[in-house]
Image 1: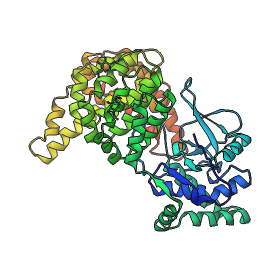
Image 2: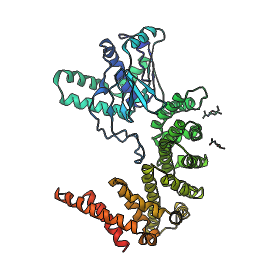
Image 3: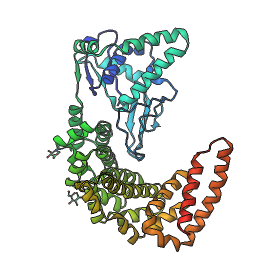
Image 4: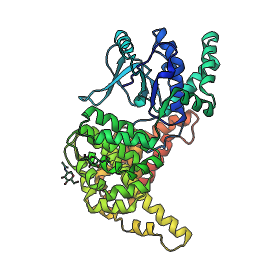
Length: 475
Ligand SMILES: *[C@@H]1O[C@H](CO)[C@@H](O)[C@H](O)[C@H]1NC(C)=O
Ligand SMILES: *[C@@H]1O[C@H](CO)[C@@H](O)[C@H](O)[C@H]1NC(C)=O
């Protein structure tokens, strides 16, 4: 996918350049390519700036941060080193220019290898006519590039003299003012697409019956990047794109369901306008159907992620969720074998919903104003009684047996939030008492070690505090 059909030498001007991103970083990419490709090709060296093997720790927050469910973490960029064999690409890894990327439909992973040199040469020879530099930025996000460029700068500042001087010059050149860059692009006859145009193109690709499954998944994969931005997600509404993606949940292809849910989770997140439209468009029912039916775990994970994004801070959706039997569906989900990962996420969601409502009430009390419409809606979300009736007191308590500390942390939090609702139940639950006592002993020991290391307010001490206060409440 990352195809570079380049001409030799400096004949750039005749090449139409299709760039998929409007962002300045996209421009930088083009320049990077433009300035690099002569070098890259004439030296048969397909490595360029992005191949720095160290992890980039760039903590850019241009992409809206979503919740922990989101699995592609743009903050952690690893650069992948392709060989001549296909290798699986992990989420968030950047791929050096000249690599060939494909989607493995069996595993759902992206795979990468080097372009065979001779094939590349053939392509170059064969593409004299109507030459076109087709930069498909599928495999990069502007985040990746920023990270890589920052790394490159860093390297230039600290590394070996000769090579790094060249790099430094390169970096300086890349950071030329935007105006200057624009002029360059005009000269190069570059086509730059806006985010909106890109999204329309991706939606059309996904919606077209002539697209292959691989193309559809790739379109969703790319779309996910764009809808993180609130404006983009709202623009998706304007041309019916959101509905097309929601309809993707209805697909018979698990991968389409998975990636559609992935896009929706990103689009809903903290975006009320999109959440409202999604509820009207039937997204909630479709997500619940996915969660209630037999699906691969990866599909359920993403569907749960989308559900969480849809419900958070949206009491109307929470009401609908309860009405549609959402709690029963989640209960079946967490009771199934091998779904502990999902169980912790479900419990976290319930905790968030319970505390969200509580905060809304507290805030109203403090301000002494007449209840807002939102608060009135929260008051119609009867979550806690539903939880008790459906056995969530017990389900949550059993999850304390999970071995991971962070999972237990979530469970302890949730037990605390359910205390008022579940107290009687908990008092008569010897298994819970035993589990808490055992955790108490474990965290006393760990907190003592922590203290020895000079950490008075450590993580384990905090966990121990939660355990202790639960035990005190159950006395
Ligand atoms: C998607 O495809 C259907 C049928 O081919 C068409 O009616 C619809 O307008 C398309 N939607 C978008 C947003 O392109
Ligand atoms: C697809 O969605 C329609 C309504 O939008 C629904 O009637 C139908 O049952 C769904 N099909 C599947 C396979 O879920």
